[in-house]
Image 1 (cartoon, rainbow, N blue to C red):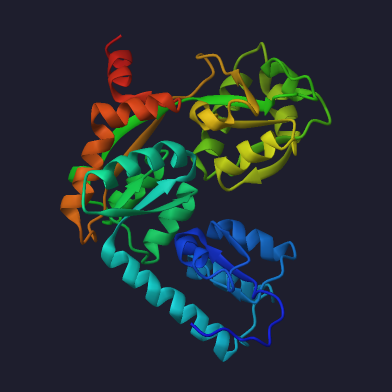
Image 2 (image 1 turned 90 degrees about the vertical axis):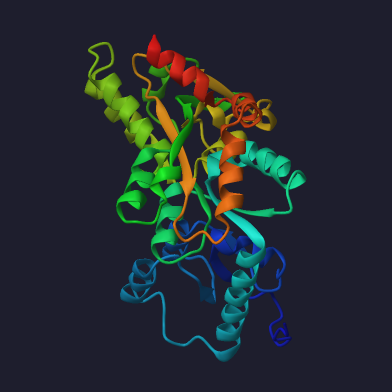
Length: 338
């Protein structure tokens, strides 16, 4: 692809994460890649961009109505977009495309490596917040498999006819925790400390599974006279940012950009265990999150998709998930019987 050499700096392109792999090969075009809901916020907050590629029409219309998007795109920008999209179609033909919640990146990258080593298929992962993945699928993005961090978005896609419902199943569970930087400058050691005025707390958006579960935890605590609604309100008053992926929460806490954050137990992955400390949420306040996966009806590689799902459900895949802090399926079944 020919680039415009008159541009002395890289062209600033805001791109949904579903096209992130393409941009990695074309760094002259992409300065910033993220989940599409996050891109809207960044533009509204003044991020510099010359081309915005949304995951949904709603997001583009919001930019137009706010005066942030104009009709002047330029031929070079249009051709750049066409090149990216045409390459996307080519990649769809050769790879098994797996849309996967961002918090599952470590575990599913390992499972993907095992799958590739035993088959003739390669996997193209799109790791992003589940709300963004759902929006991309609803707007026509191609995927063979969806791996979700909650039932809400999977059930919506099932009801809308996107999923092969016979393949959708629970593969693991998870619970919530509070995480703090290892050096813990705010000296947060128990949940009660989160209501101290002036703390900087991170939480997921209400539509993000981790954000939804975090609010459920706070509501349960509010129902207990030991904490009460004043506790929940004080904690929420300390929230300085609502993140669109749980990976952002963990990364920002590790860097010391906030004092505490709500995340899944599994989000403190093996590589993050030396950077963040986990504070347990007692079972009486915690929420068991069930994680489903399944094949999409549009899949052009159904046999490969089923083999990938089988690997996740097999003992080998379950052992990897357990190593990352997920609750494997056999333990979920045992807890139900108990």
